[in-house]
Every structure is written in C-alpha cells, then in structure tokens.
Image 1 (cartoon, rainbow, N blue to C red):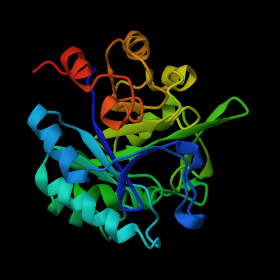
Image 2 (image 1 turned 90 degrees about the vertical axis):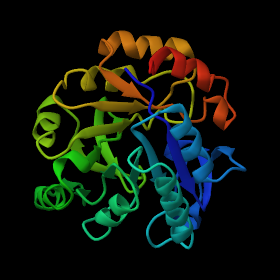
Image 3 (image 1 turned 120 degrees about the vertical axis):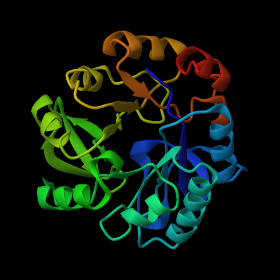
Image 4 (image 1 turned 180 degrees about the vertical axis):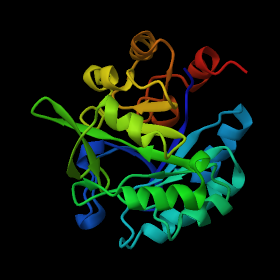
Amino acid sequence: MNFRPCIDIHNGKVKQIVGGSLKDAGDQADENFVSRLCAVDYARLYKEKGLCGGHVILLNSVGSEYYEEDVRQAEAALREYPGGLQAGGGITCDNAKKFLEEGASHVIVTSYVFSGGEIHFERLEKLSQLVGKKHLVLDLSCREKDGIYYIVTDRWQKFTKQPLDEALMSRLSRYCDEFLVHGVNVEGTGGGIDRGLVEILVKNTEIPITYAGGIGKMEDLELLDQMSQGRIHFTVGSALDLFGGRLKFDEIITKYNKL
C-alpha cells in the first residue's frame, strides 16, 4: 500500500474541495483549502520525495472560462515531473495524447467512457488502443444511493445507471492499467473511509487501485491497509498538512512509501 499524491486544480488554482459540492454552474465548489502555490510547486515536491503515481485533476469543465488556466497549470506540473504524474479531467481521444506528450505517465478517464448513464465500450476500446492499456487509468468514482454504489461522472455531478461490482471491474481491467476510485459521499470530509466501497474494491485483484475519500487520521489508513491486506493504494487531500490538514505528509511517506 503506497501513498499517491494529488494536485487538484479548480478555477486555475490548486484546491481541495468537498467533492459532492462541485457544480459547473458558476464554477462553484465548497472549498476546504486554496493554495498560494502553483501546481508546479507541488509537482517539484513530489519529484524530490520520489513519489510516483500521483494525479493531476482538472476540475473545471471543458467549456469553463477557467479550463485553459487549469490546463496551463497541469501541463507545467507534468513537465516538471515527467513520468511521475497522471492527468485527468475532460480526457477524450482528442486530447489524451497531448497530456502524455506533456509528461503524464497515464491519462485518467471517466465521463468520456461513462456517458449518458451508460458504458460506451467502443470509446473505451478506441482510447485504450490510442494511448495503450499501460497508459490508461479508469476513474470509477462512486456515490452511494439506496444502498448501491453507482459510478458518477461529470465531476461527480451525474449518476450513471452502472453499479460498481466485481464483474464490471474484471471486465474493465482488460482495457486499463489502474483504477482510481473516489468515495464521493465522504470525499473532503475527513470523517473516515467509505467501508462499503472499500469492501467492493478489495474483491478486485487484477490491476492496481488507488482509493480516495474520507481519510482524516492515521487510523483510517491503518483500517484501509487492514481491509485491503495492503493491496489498495491511497491518496489524501484536505486532511494532509500540505493542504491545511493535520495528517503529516512526511509521516505518511515514512510509513507507506519506503524507498
């Protein structure tokens, strides 16, 4: 189990937000933290610490007035740490290669594949062939509704009709190198991991998984480690001291990223 760092960009700034609060209308979100540093500063730190597999996420929609500034920040971070970061947010067949050329190790995709409530396997296959399975991460971020975890898209605003289960993850793993899964119901709260979601994730053993959501203290990481038997990686956002939280960046690296 390793720590995967993050750089979330919204309205042209590095931020930590409450996940379920994100709205395209007015480019609004409830903010936990707004950094005075640029994305490239965080990329430089992660490179210095030897942290791989982190993700840079553009949180504004492609049509937003802030999207191009998000892209500028993301590309600067990717160039600072080539091969060390993954890039996500508005990824399609039209722009995926561009982010890889800028230095991303992988592109992270949700809404292009999960659109209109359905899985578009023809898009997934085309994208996988375009960039290569080894450069593709599928974001299977979920929200719980009526006891079922559904994949959500469009910056976590829209429910698909697709529940997350072991059979789906097995089928999707043929096309991608990793899964990234946010527990959106607890994202940004620091109130503990989403145990129900983690119980689903631990049934998948075919490709790596990075979990995010609700991690607020070291005991949450110990529980995730125990539940997954050390097989699920994790990322921490607003609870991390880099983003105004109490969890110590260096302590996490020492415990979970032994070099």
